Image 1 (cartoon, rainbow over the protein chains, first blue to last red):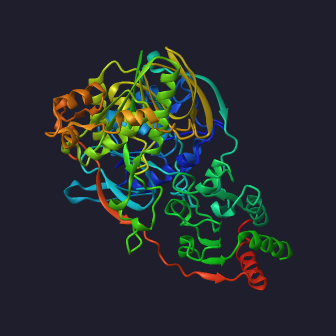
Image 2: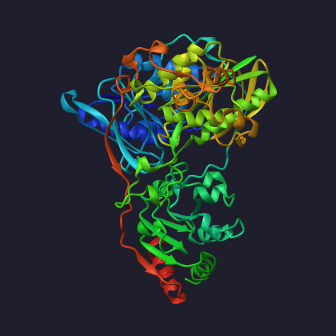
Image 3: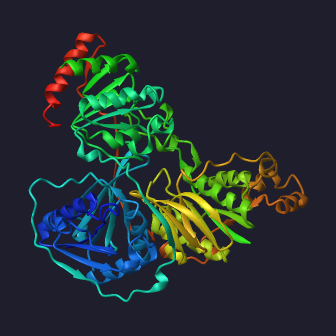
Length: 330
Length: 294
């Protein structure tokens, strides 16, 4: 069993992206029962500066291709290089982060290799399938988060998937593999570079919900941008992060990068406080694995209460100030 | 004159699930959902029309789907598409993204001399965002995904903004190219009244037979054709397709299992709005979570 993992770096910091570390560990744990190999592939201008971390988390080997012209995502160049790497390594499975880069490249490769690709997986496991032997079972939410589908690629190889960031968290204890990197030999072709990057502006606002234990999120029921300040204050009082439902983002109460749910971030804090969030399936897809869920909503029938552990039925404009007051006193 | 193809999909409206679409067990009755023009595809459609407004271009909208998908092609005509084509065949049933992209790519090749292909970022039923790039690969086009803005439109190139997730990228990209369009790019226009008058009775030949059939003469067919009201339907044989690459046969992925997500009853502890009760709740939370943020 050999799994190839696409390794990405954060262009703003030059460090590995979290999802790449998560995938390194996931690939390691998937191949372990087979004494298999977890191989990273990297394409870019320079290796991530903290490459050793991928090995600490279970990568066995990293194959890389560097060229100064590959600082940015040139889809055709990246695809041609990774395709050559896959053809040389003949893996059983290829995993990408479900990042904008991963979801740009993985479909190109699956098309070129004429194989199956499953998008945005939240669970992966290997099991026997009829006489085919062990295959990858890929679980993903579909249909707007209303169903959970298990997708397989029984015949074609490699089996390919993109994996959501933040859902396959590695444990504290790491395999601690030694660093083993090898350059990939391939003649660079100028015609692979078609787009011209005129400018690149780093986004500074990406919120790392995974680093916080408490999230206070507001929804349509917050009512106005002014009222949303209550959500910010409550988050501050708990030392947590502010989240928002899609409705709150659509109404302009909160910026898009704070969106939690099917089309936003997937979070699993220790405590999730949902304020004025009815709890649509789309929203629940992003937060229902939180350890404890508290809901404040004026509608006792709101679906959020069916997954909440703690609930207050009432007007959040009255309740939150009281909460804030007692939090100060406590 | 640029030739622009818009890839559109008719989808169940998963974003607006109402009571009627919920079954007694709390799962969604997918068959009861109304169908809509996939939202991101409307942004792709608007992008095409804006490019047409800026430079000379022909906008052709294609969709692969059942005969009922004609509804979104009519919407495209109402918005201002020049031509629409329905790609429909029972042999396409059960297609995953690989088989779908094969059929769409062959249709684009048949149309020929295409400069620009526009697709919505993703469809709200599958959420895969794969068909656009897979079409690009099959027709040998360059691609730029996650477009958030079209800044400059010229005869030779476009300047676009791309949401690179961690950074925003401004990219100059020459034709031919395939772009996947996000809902940040623009606000889709409303249907045009004159176009609605012109196309309200548009349909496929078999649909028009029901209204034009025997009752009226050939003149009506002539008129319908002259007014671009007969929507062409391309089947597998019209495209000369390899049937082993279509539909379920051409799909490497299989759905192994489907679990409906149900509303599970948790052990909900309800507090009333009495201040003392809230105080107790705050104290409980403080106790439980004071240490986790240390």
